[in-house]
Length: 94
Image (cartoon, rainbow, N blue to C red; front, side):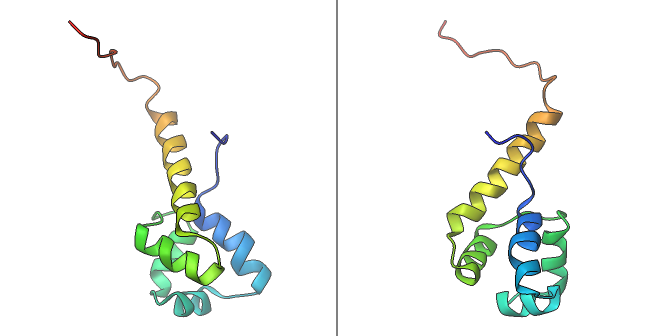
């Protein structure tokens, strides 16, 4: 498991939009989504949905699975940080 993985929106901004000198508006138009939705993703306010993963995969010549895996790694890391104090007992046969 990666230590503190980046949000997929951060990856999108830094590794795709910036090198291609794409604006949020231009990228949103290419993805077929609203500028607001893309801005929320880039700023980490929303996560990558399966449909967004498919769009990103097509647009960036990557796989939808890679975007979903990034989102899952990010979500698990964030959740584990906040749930270390859970009082859960192991399930065992009686």
